[in-house]
Length: 216
Ligand SMILES: *Cc1c(COP(=O)(O)O)cnc(C)c1O
Image (cartoon, rainbow, N blue to C red; front, side, top):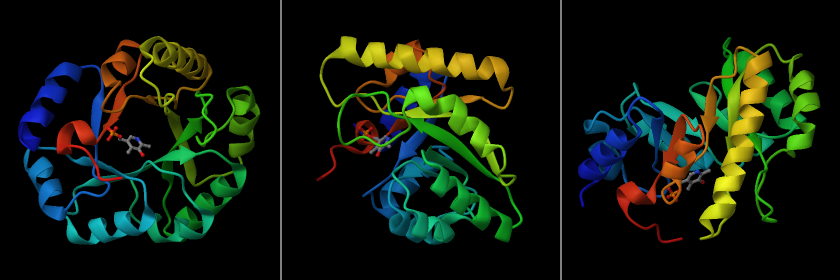
């Protein structure tokens, strides 16, 4: 199926509930243009170099989302233009984002990445540290926390994934009740976005379902 067809199917499935971030990592400019021509404006990348290169080559009304693990020394390359950072998970990174945002006289929207899966390789903040982390972030005037992001376990076990999404939904609803700036719950990828939307996701990040399998 074509990129265009996949995008319309996904968009009709999530209509009125969630927004689609097209995950364009490893994809060519032509493939991205095909998605863009279908009306997509939000694209997600997980590597800074690739994100910067694509930002420079593609139309400037695209909202670029940084969805992958972010190293402090690379923050400076994306601070002028990044639209949303999904992967804020430590104070030292927040400090760096805040400093760079100030340079450009802007405020950068961020999601706090929560480690919900028991997998060893996943980044993110332990849910039990969320409240104190969030209050530590208040000193950073040029960071805007607008929600949470998480990745489910890498497994075919749908019940486990559903439990993880339910836990994320609870955490999100709890934060939202006391912080009116919490708006976004970014959960759900190609294989699990329907389950995520059933459990309160309002932003899904989908790559291979749209473009086909990646080679890594
Ligand atoms: C690659 C990636 C996705 C998209 O994965 P697909 O399975 O291709 O949909 C979503 N979120 C993050 C953080 C990713 O790195």
